[in-house]
Amino acid sequence: MNINFLASVKLVKIPARLIYGNGLKFNMADTRSGKYLGKMKVTPMTLVNNPFYKNSKPIKSLYINDLWIIPFARRHNAGAEFVKFAKYLSKKNNCEGRIYTLAYNYENPGTPPHKFWRKMGFASTSKEENLILDEAIKNHASIPADMCMGTTMFLEKF
Image (cartoon, rainbow, N blue to C red):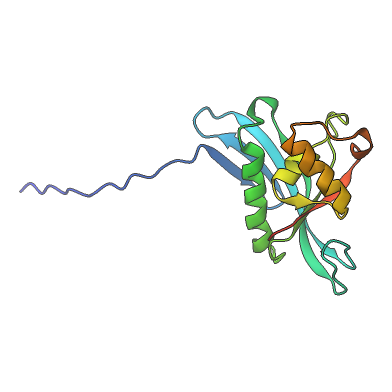
């Protein structure tokens, strides 16, 4: 007796990139080539009297203490995918979507990442700095040298 089973096969779209890690340190790889694309380290932190969140009681926020994308993968949304993943981690770690980082390029201090973070929805506590960044993004201009130092930036809408 021959029995033929025909099962419907559901096609699953494999994502172009895979983020994997141990809870605080994550890596990204291209699923087609297997190439390493970058890393991100995060830490849930408790903030008190924060000027951005204007809180008097302690609140939790996810701190991105390292985000690095391999040069050939930059400008191809790899950083944006890490930020999207950080939003998920913030909620998973009871930070309610709050995220902050120090915008500073340790690898190349003369090339600040402030415009990247601003494009991702982050803001400084300084309205003037935010306006300068918005104009620099709009006009494809560099930011002033005095802003190349580290700036703490917070996710505005969470």
